Image 1 (cartoon, rainbow, N blue to C red):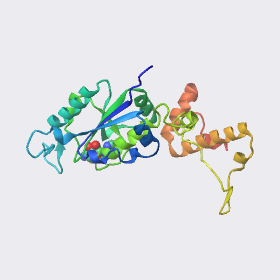
Image 2: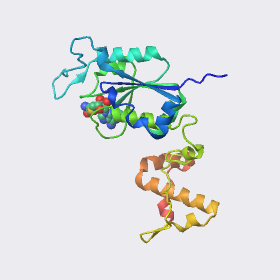
Image 3: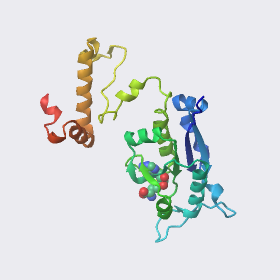
Image 4: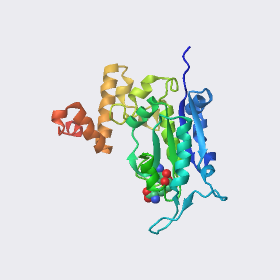
Length: 250
Ligand code: SAH
């Protein structure tokens, strides 16, 4: 019998009650219950040494807000690493590299993650460097804390763990799987408030449906995400990366 270790997430936060939050529901919740993954919440405050359990202090150089102390955060990180080494250490921050599905896929294939959630103005940069934290952003927005970002990251990873999603096809066809956004989806009723479903989808002709969906995926990606589109073109035909836009072919 092979013993399968659960994918192991540790979340370092001063608000451990925020987790599992939405991760207790649906796919992720069921997978948590059945032991596909495991969640440890580490309360950073428990690693403060003073009577008041202080985790933050004023920024050197002045300015608004408080900064999380490197000594307290490092103790919390070191404890999480000691409990299960060989997991990447991520710090959620708007200064990080934007999270992408490719990175999510890599993380889901590993043994788990340690996620550091900032609060206040963030974490002292020295601990980020001393512990070689990978700085990851949820996007060009500023949250009030890292917890919602950690929850989003875990949700994205857990649904990819073996056995969590019903159909492997959903994963291989969804947005970003091939560098494109997904084609639009339609369901019943066939006629809704005078809006019809695209005729191609009713044709029953699989090749035509596939071609239509591919075209729609290309169009929406080109229009909304020129960054993804350019990369997609370069991958398709590296020597013709500057070929004419798909919309010009219409
Ligand atoms: N002063 C910081 C923002 C701090 S927000 C700045 O301007 O960059 C407080 C905490 O919320 C951060 O430490 C981080 O952990 C979290 N956070 C905010 N926005 C985020 C984002 N886009 N992605 C990931 N984490 C974020």
